Each structure stands twice: as structure tokens, then as C-alpha cells.
Length: 205
Image 1 (spheres, rainbow, N blue to C red):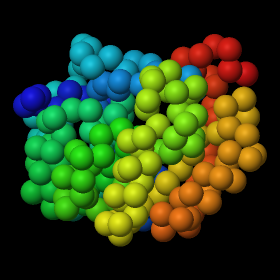
Image 2 (cartoon, one colour):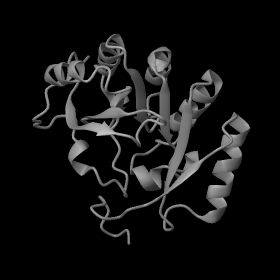
Image 3 (cartoon, rainbow, N blue to C red):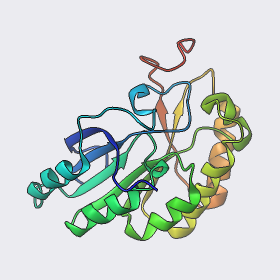
Image 4 (cartoon, one colour):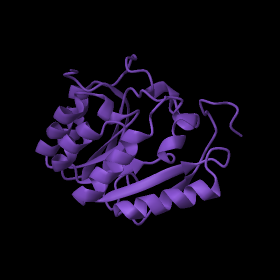
């Protein structure tokens, strides 16, 4: 298991990544999916050279106590790293709230993290049976919907969002996704417009 969080990027100040809070964002390196509209290709390899050192970032965050409210772990896919739980504990011990951006691909890891999280942004990409056409990974649609159910049951502050490209998500599928989320106890879905600039799949217009 990884002992040190691998960091591919860092935003020292933002007001939009944790609702109602001023936060820093840690972009975790690595993601096993290759979503066609992904524009963070540099964060996808699990191992990559980085100018960011987790211990140095912790020292920086120490100086931001009282100025920032929260630290958000984004990606890549944060839950792909075994070191995430320890990193969450590190910032929690400093008194920060902790947010997580995740595609929900590791529901058991997510469940273990829940007691330490204050807010989660969950990306739902499609109906379970249609995930592979976006992620290009067979069988990828089951885990995210399991994560949605876990989050709904936990009652943690949550935003579920879907990045929509008209070639990938029809009106009918979007309506069914809303219905299934409502059935889980998640009444709101935030639909984000897909920005295809720098997308992994150059065929998306």
C-alpha cells in the first residue's frame, strides 16, 4: 500500500470546490479510467514525475490555518491511492474540513473514509450499463452506483454531478439517471457542460 500521497497538482485557494468554504485543492496522481472527455491527461498515470511533495504541502497548509476552511482531494482519482486515508487524517488533524471529488470507483475505500469527510462531490457518468463507452474500461459502471447508494445512506453533504456531452448522454438516459438517483434518495443532479478542449478523445466535438 502506498505510504505517501502522490500529488500531481495543487490549487492554494479556491471558493468553488467546497460549497460555502474557502479551500485548497490537492490533485491526486493516477486514475485507472480513460474517460473520453477527460481533460486532465497528465494526472492519469499512477506514477509520474511531480514537483509536489506531500510533506511540503502539509507544511504549507499549516501556515494557512485560520485562513482556509477546507482541503479538497481531487484527481485523477483520489481513492485509487492507499495513502489517501492517512493524508485525510493529516489535514483533519490541522482543523480543516475535508472534501473529496471522486468518480466512486472504489466504494469500500469510500465507505472507510466517510467518517472523516465533510463533503463529497460524486461524478456519475452514465447508467451502469453505458459506462464502458465513456471510461473505456469494461465493467466500470457498477462501482459508481454502489458509491452513490453508500453516500445517500450515509447522509453526508453531497453533490452528484454529470459531465454531459451530447454524443455520449441522450436526453432519455439523462432522465433515467435522474430517476434512479431520486430512487436512491438523491433528488438533485448537477449537469455540467462538457469542455472538449484537450479531451483524451479528439473525436469529441
